[in-house]
Picture 1 (cartoon, rainbow, N blue to C red):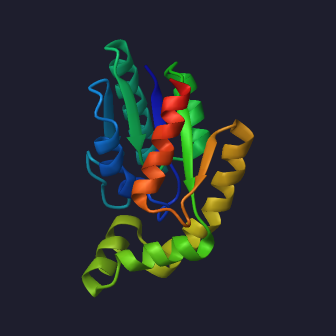
Picture 2: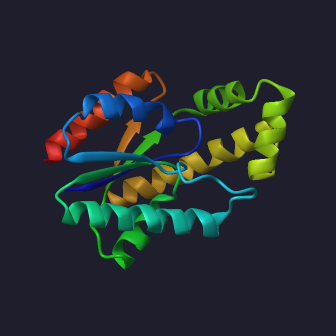
Length: 177
């Protein structure tokens, strides 16, 4: 049994693949979590993200003890996943979802078309959609660089539907065993 962490910046498809992973991995020995399913507080910061990463990796460890593989889909920095996994003493396989700058920007901007949605984003992260998109484009190159150094699987979702990306993730998982 394994622990898999599907991560990447906003706009690369982490949340979009969850339902496809669930329908493609019908084996009762898999459980799939959305990193944000416990709720995201106002002004969620690095401390909150690291705490949630620890929570989900500890949940993965508990599941592993029950012979259940865990898939966690959500935003956490690759180096933080690695450090926290080492701290809680669990091996983790990381898949970094990635996309080009234009795709990340389009996907993020498409999420916030109304004034109400823009206000909600600013409540959650303290940024306009434009600033949020540009920050994620910048962070994507850092994530990609770190993931490559750590030997993580990198999946470019620029031209992939969520269903196709999920199929590629499942193929990776199956290849590991």
